[in-house]
Image (tube, each protein chain N blue to C red):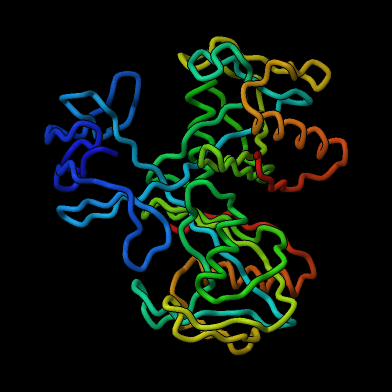
Length: 176
Length: 176
C-alpha cells in the first residue's frame, strides 16, 4: 500500500496504532488504519458414484495441474454458496452439499481453505475458461504428482481416508 | 474506496473487470483491481468444569453485552492460533483446544465466524481493556437476553446441545 485509499495521501506507513499491538498501514494525513486480513478459499470435493471430479487448471498459478473446484469467497455470500459458485464457475457442475471435510490454515500466504463434500446426482460437467479438462477419477488414478495445491492434496487424502473408514470427519490443520 | 492505494489516483470506480463477473473497485489510471473479501472472526467457547467463560464487552460495538472471546483473524496466523490469541487478549485465559463447534457465515456483513471448544485446566482469567467483567457461567445462568452477537448465541446454544447429547459436532449455518 503506497497511497491512502481514503484521502489519496502518499504518507502511508507501517506503524502500530494506539491501542493495537500489530503494525498496520496508517495514513499520517487522515489517520485511517488500513487492515489486511486472511482470505477464505472455499471449495468442494464433488463425488459421482465412487469417483471424484478434478479440474485441470487453465489459469495461473499452477497452470496445467489438477485441482478441486475452489476459489476466493466473495463478500455477501455464505461459505457454502461460495463453494457451489466456484464449482459452477470452474466445472459447470452441481452437487448436493455434504459435511465440511477440511479447514486448512495456510499462514504463509494468509489464507484459510474450507472444503465441503458434495454429491453429484449425474455426471454433468463442462470445461470452462478456468478448467481446460475435467475428469471423474477413481482413487487408484488420482494424479498425485500433478496436484496443484497442498490443501487440495490434503483434502483428497482426507476424503479417501474417511470413505475407507465409513465416516466423514472434519480435519483442521495448518499447512506450514 | 476513493483513491487507488497503488498509484494515488482519484479515478477509482466500481466496474466489472475483463474476465470477471462482479463489480470491483478498479483504477482507471493504473488498472489495479482492488478486491474486498469476507473477514474471519475466530473464537473459543472456554469451559472450566461445567461452566463457560463469558466476557462483558468494554468496547463498541455492543458495549456492556456478554460475549465469547473472539476477534478478527490476523495475517500470518492459523485459525486456531487466532482463536487462542483472542482468548488471551480479551480474558487472559488459556485452554486446550478442542473441536470446531460452529462455522457461521454472516453474509450481510461479509464475515465468517469460526468457534472452537476449549478446555480450561484452571479458573484463571482477568479483565482487560476489551472486557470489563468476566464470569464462569453455568447453563442456567447464561444471560441470554444480554448476549452481544447472534453468532455467539448460536454457538452457546450449540455447545450446550452437544454437551447434553454427549457428542460435539460441527454446526455450519448462515445468519441471515
